[in-house]
Length: 213
Image 1: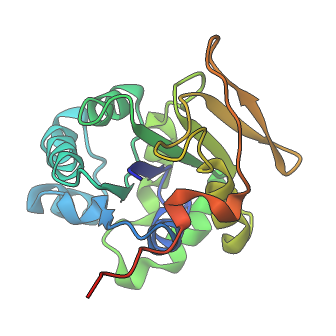
Image 2 (image 1 turned 180 degrees about the vertical axis):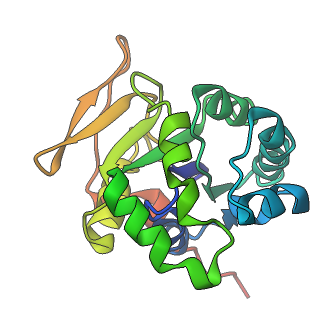
């Protein structure tokens, strides 16, 4: 089973928290996008200067290299704010890269980022710039939309349910899915048939077989 999952959204939406839980449950490596920013970009953000498209080019290339270097799959945390950024990442494993978009309002994101100021280089003053840059992944393939204010266990369970594949050796068929009263409205491309197994049987989350001998 190979899964490539990106947890995306603006600062403060909870990418790292959800990413850790999903990666652990799926038995996949976790790649934190923040770890691959250049020293120059980190310095800019510490000074309250928003990154530009040019600043992010090398960062996205490094993340694409990480995706390509993990053929067994991975969970990546990355803001992936623009469609062009997401398409750049998709090129590493198209069409197998899936996005979980954590949707959050400005006030909640601002409060969360301010609360972690002592141990994170990203300042609360830059939260507004993230919303200005954000291009929500509407009508894009392989995207799950979630309410970032929901409890973490519930979010993780929703990702797990989404990863219940249409076959035993693949991730979800490309489609754009959004929460609707706690469920998902599944918009599947014409010609794609999807059948679902129970979430607790998703191969992404089954324990690894013990080595022989």
